[in-house]
Length: 321
Image (cartoon, rainbow, N blue to C red; front, side, top):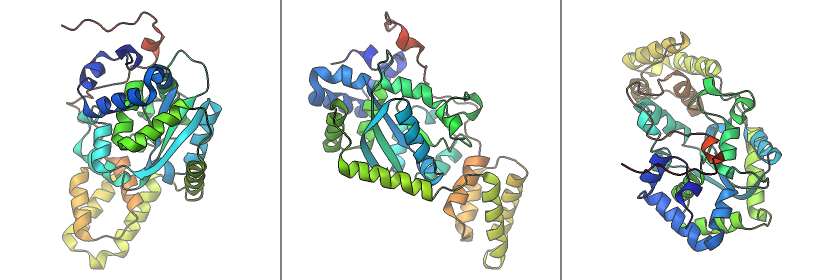
């Protein structure tokens, strides 16, 4: 089995994952599929999920180009809806900081399929492929992004519309494959990551189709445009909406127009009761743009540490108390 320091450089993550069911399943199956090649295969393997907002926003073509430019070869492709329990498990240790409003808006975003890409790093690097890709992508907080990172290049609009997700370390890749895929499909992916062959023809066709659909259907994620369309819909449908609900929606939309953050759950309740016919993506755009993202009294249970610990050849976990 790989040593913990080959899987993560975060002591708390090692302690949490030691009994975490998804990680344990992933590590066990990787070892059974890959054997002694497990550490080397994990070192050069990475995982990206282009989120529904990235696909609908037309970002997939440039993201795939970016991966190729930086030496990441796509070896497996899956196109599926990430259900509410899956994405909550995916970010279990980060959503401890999230408001309930952010969870509700995320449910809107993940009602559409995402695109999972399993990657092989063709470069030679002391960094695991997961860590190298995580550094290239940039943080989800727009204010902290550097000019050359992928998220800045993709013009990420806000925290919710982060466009894509990557596994940060080898331990996360193992855990996330277990969240996304059943045992049979995971075995196929591990074999693809270990191999040297091209992407299977059916998966290449799927990739080409989804990327082309993303290019063709690209829509603006601009909050101002979405707000104008929803306000127009509310005005046009005033006669069919109860006055109480109409007034609540009108007030919330006016607050958004003034640049204010709103309480999303009361707005969503009024929206559901009103029966307002509006583009679901326009509603998701408003949620992503005008909610409070984090609880100021809370914090993430796990945070990324960047690449620096992975460049320490004598790294060891501190002894436990």
